[in-house]
Length: 383
Ligand SMILES: NC(=O)c1ccc[n+]([C@@H]2O[C@H](COP(=O)([O-])OP(=O)(O)OC[C@H]3O[C@@H](n4cnc5c(N)ncnc54)[C@H](O)[C@@H]3O)[C@@H](O)[C@H]2O)c1
Image (cartoon, rainbow, N blue to C red):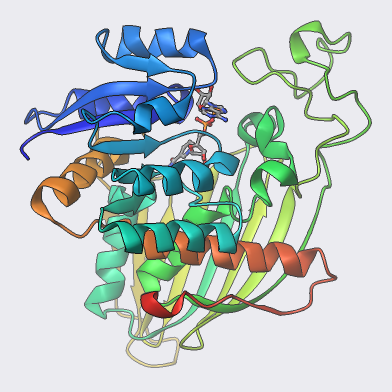
């Protein structure tokens, strides 16, 4: 095979990455089909990506086609398990967006289908392809900060709840928890950069700002309070963020013990005025930290456990072109390398499963008074 023919399920929103396959600079892919619940969005997809693409509102019609080698699942979280399993069982390679599924058991069903199928699977962990986090991983792997013992992550999720409280993300039925929705990337960064998975967590969390008693069908454009409401939105996501059905916590604190004893903490808040992620890795010989607003990574090293410091190093992270800090075209290229060259992807399905499993354990803990919860182990064949 020298060209991968791709079908996309969930064609707008995140499905927009299809353009990177259609425009692959080496012509190694063609986006030949799309499935979505919205005919209007299917038409937008044809206009934007490929006018000749086959489109359908029944994803099974896409999976039946012999002229499709691979499926990208870029629809909402609660659909991933059904679509990824069905695609693998139909003999397709699969790119599945994060979180891999909304339960650990759901992830394991995907992994088992993958194992049985002999096809390729990868997960949409595009942070693994961002310059900043690649640099941090290389520094950690170089050993310059010694053995990592502690990780602290502060995640400021600002933007007035735009991405998480004005649409389907706000319900447990759709996402389980924002610890594994939004946080699956960050839990994965902790796993990837340290090289260790989480074995036990405890968490506290609550709904402190969003949610409330507004009707579930209230929308910002027609809301009588939309001129004074600080959170009113008029873009694609317009459901009221103070509606009754919202039940996923907007303020989460999770502590984690990794399988080699590393202690990690992940702090996530959805009503900050700003948007960024601040990571610190502390090793036996130094400390690594990033600043997204400044596009910098610092390494502080020391020669002894005293005040005697010799020098710090500052890394200026290069800007890259493309969505999510240049990561989206690169992760799409990795998907093609996996299928065409047999390359192991940087964003592995096992990693996808382990971050969801840690997030699910965190959700269980915070909803049961903060008691420690063990992360469910991988299926035997995958350990
Ligand atoms: N890796 C990343 O950086 C990143 C970024 C954004 C979103 N995502 C992931 O992508 C997925 C989609 O998120 P989004 O914000 O684009 O969502 P969205 O609500 O914009 O939906 C995406 C598309 O899926 C379609 N869709 C909705 N329900 C469907 C169904 N039942 N079957 C088929 N299609 C359906 C929608 O019509 C839309 O075209 C989520 O799982 C999210 O976590 C990942």
